[in-house]
Length: 198
Length: 307
Image (cartoon, rainbow over all chains, first blue to last red; front, side):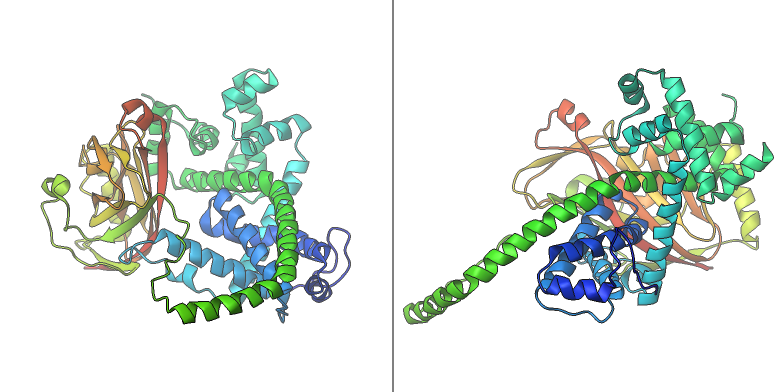
């Protein structure tokens, strides 16, 4: 596992930040949240495939970790411990959905993956989201704004067109181009193949 | 209508994923996807990209919300620490009083937070209330419980690829064979305190079955024209009551856009079920049509073995 040293301007190790959190410094935990929010969220997102649920579970994970640290719990390795909490939260969520005793239980790979697998998956998702961010940065500002209206505010193409005062066809065409570029950026095999074919 | 090319389908994929495709276009895309593995892969990529973009655009706001919650938590913790010694003293006195008076009544735990409607998937059919008994012609309840079940595949000497080819040809000829009979039951239980109405088979109804596995195949069309989930009825669910919806075959979709799902080779498959239905405290059609909700059932693992 990589030792996170600097993110958000902080150069302290996880262990130092954990000790400061235990001593009552909320800001130290902010730095840990900055470091791991994406990886934990990405892991949960991959498992539940629903951004709203993944966000709730991510928040609960960090709050539980924070409460534990404030209660004096000193984890041996913060990252592994945090992913463990995330994984347990995920299990609880899946069980809550299986409210009936005779409902289908979650499949085994969700119920009990090995800890290294969780960490590996979370890191892979973090990298994927990083690639997406880099891909978005390469898009024109106007296209980024359209994507934000679509994916942050959940507007339809018609609503976006009305908001920005452009024809629906233009909005769709700009978004289509952006989706194709991003899929290629993320290594979409089907998109790349089509790109080569055309 | 003219079939779509791969390029045309690729253009439409993001809008199908976002639910902004016209119904007739969606039908054509689904028809194309049934035959084109490359575009099916593209559909998966478009879905993943959409999910990642949704997450990305809410990430900073989420982190900000977490910071606010951490501060609230920190303040609450500080209050708790300040008040705790006092509370402990009061609690000791209260405990003594409790013993002295000899109170033995039950202490009811606080109600846990839970959704209004609980949803589950039963393996097997049977044990239905009167209103659905006529539909299921009861095969006995096979099993209750367990996230894994075993099914058998009869290939009749064909290879899985030949079997898929035969299914595709049947789909083209409009003579789809019945998909695997699974006899599952979707259970919706009203856990709230008010009576709710379900618009089963109403305009917003959709059953979505996602079957993933080594030989999963989804083809447009269905041998069963009016599966139970599209049979229109408004169901009244008083608090505590449940509604059982039989899912006999792997058939999903919406009215006029049904799909049949098949496993075409032995292996381990995972079935995800989403059920969208109108739910409202009022039985008025307008309310029911306007307030659809989607219920997601935990995945079920199906081990398919060669017969």
